[in-house]
Length: 170
Image (cartoon, helix red, strand yellow):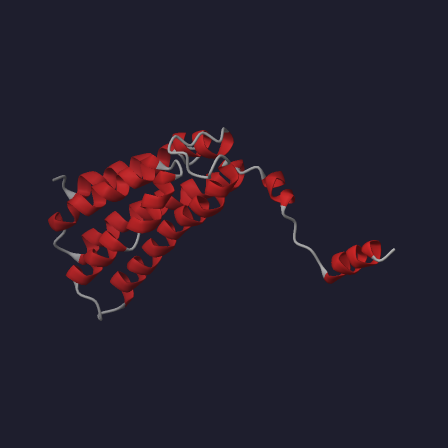
């Protein structure tokens, strides 16, 4: 079992590495549409819609854990560790199914090192490192996602339906 500090430092290095360049999984999954699990039923678009939201959720869950650890006495360290173990797990696991393996790897390492944490301040440092990494991955997703792909299902207005009915009634 790795020490929490080793994992936190590893995440900090990973975050710094992707601050100005996207990580491997963003380029593989978003830029090139390579999803080795077959997620998306033959199209990367389906996987992107859900996985990108789940990557964002990992960062969001970290924020809540950080807030509770820093501003609430209602939660014990063990409860905060359980939150850290469980909350980001599901979205990160699904994101991995859709191609974001590195994030899932870090979540697994965090789960394995939580028993080495003895103070809330240590948990805050670890979760803050994950928060920064996950949010940087999320930012790169929004840089690389082919926004034009969303034109296949545009938002429509009432006027669109009126025009279509007028067309059909001619």
